[in-house]
Length: 195
Image (cartoon, rainbow, N blue to C red):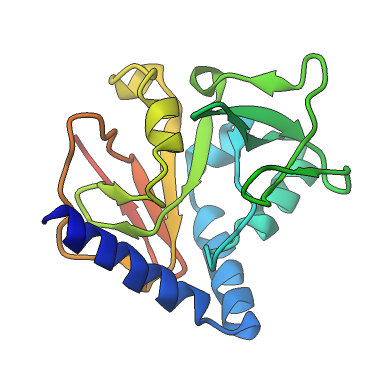
């Protein structure tokens, strides 16, 4: 896949998810939450990173609120130069918008946690294949952040990509810096990936 083909695929998939109605997004979010309830490692996790949906991304907000009520420590990604840090999130807290207009928890002493100290990271996808490869927005923020994680599954957070089921593509190109996902969860199914 050429760079131009990748760019065009990204545009096409983003347009598809942005075209979903509010009602369709709510149904997809509810169905995603049903799938994530079956994800045992997340139910047992103490520290979990989520994201706030943007640009038509499937929403993990139902799961985030449910897990926060169940006393899991929940975090949101925050820009830190060209990478991400994760700050503790509490439902109802006041958030600040970053340069992409995405809300983030404000910086406070002791509310940040590095990626390698999280148990589960839920991350948004523009596209995915069933080999665990992801197509992101193109900024490389997650790639740079996850590049510091150990490659051994047992020594790093469970990486769970979230997407609408229609965002699946046959095959994505793999770059040397790409870190494959452990699980992909959509509104229709869970894909457990083995390496």
